[in-house]
Every structure is written in C-alpha cells, then in structure tokens.
Amino acid sequence: MRVVIAEDHALLRDGLTRLLGAFDFDVVAVVDNGPALLPALLQHRPDVAVLDVRLPPTFTDEGLQAAIAARTRLPGLPVLMLSQHVEPLYARELLSTPYGGIGYLLKDRVADVSDFVDAVHRVADGGTAMDPEVISRLVARREPLAVLTTREREVLGEMAQGRSNAAIATNLGITEKAVSKHINNMLTKLDLPPSDDDNRRVLAVLAYLNA
Image 1 (cartoon, helix red, strand yellow):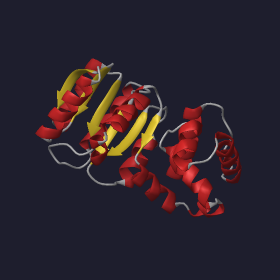
Image 2 (cartoon, one colour):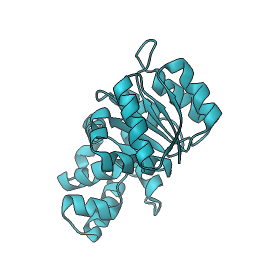
Image 3 (cartoon, rainbow, N blue to C red):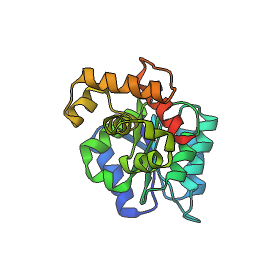
Image 4 (cartoon, rainbow, N blue to C red):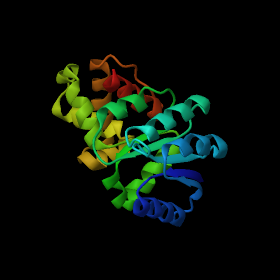
C-alpha cells in the first residue's frame, strides 16, 4: 500500500516512515513543508496520505489545506491528518469535503502502534478514523444531542471513530443486538436515514456533528 507522509518534526517523520514500512506500507514520498506537499500528493496519488495539520512555512494549516486541495483534484484520496492538539475547527473543515477515507488523530495516538496502523488501514479502505477527543468536542457543541441517552452518546462516539457494531459491542460491554438497537434509536432521533453501509452511516453522523 503506497503512502505519502508529511511531517516537519524530524524524529516523528523518521518514526512514521519506519513504523509504516515495518507494516508493509510502501512510503513513496516524505515531505517536511506545505509547498512540497500538494505536488507530492498529485504526483504519487498514494493509497493513503498521513499528514501533519501544521507545516512550514507558517505552521498554521498548510497540511490541511493541501489535503483538501488534493481531494478536490483526486476525489476520495484517503487522508489521515495528525495534530498536536485538539482542533475541532480543522476537523470540521476536513469533514466538509465529500467522500470517505478521512481521519483526524492526535499525534499521541501514534504511540499505540496497533490502533494507529488499524486507523491508517481503515482510512485507506475508505472509512473514517476520528480521534475520540475531537468527537467529544464536536458532540459537546450540538445541543440537539441532548435528546440522546448516555448510552446512545457512547455509541455515537464509537461510531464516529469508524468502529463496527462488533467492535462497539466489545468496547462497551454490550451485545451487538443492543448496539443495533441503540443506533436505530439514535438515527431516528437525529432524523438521519438508516444505512447498511457502515461508512455512509459514519459519514452521516459526522456530517450531523459538522453542521
């Protein structure tokens, strides 16, 4: 699986390159600044891009803007953004782009190798991988979510991270049948159409949180 990495911090950049290489990813390009990123993405058309939100020269949102521009030129380009801090506004901007294959994680998550690699694969496959802290911030903004029960909010958070019903059931210690019931109730309350497609289901929830 071909991957482009963008990270200005030398140690993390080298760590990401070695880590992904160890899990059979083919790192086709590594850049450390914003101006070089978009050309690299357009040239290599990777299966997934792992990008820092903030890159030189201004360290604002060069990585994010390059990702959005690339997804405009290459619809559906899978992108996993990494950030030092929770920045819901940047997450919202990424979520405003169409198609799946999106992720937004705090850099601390890289330390959990198995979860991080799973997130990269999930995004590459067209799914989502949203950081729980980002989801919490987005959920907190939505007063209409007050109609949900505590358990439904927990299920919503798990869904928004791109987890399957089976994974949600395991994490929350409930049955898959209970998860399905909570999801159906939640989608009804939020006036979102049910879907058998997990990715569309997650994107529908994220679109609601992003509204």
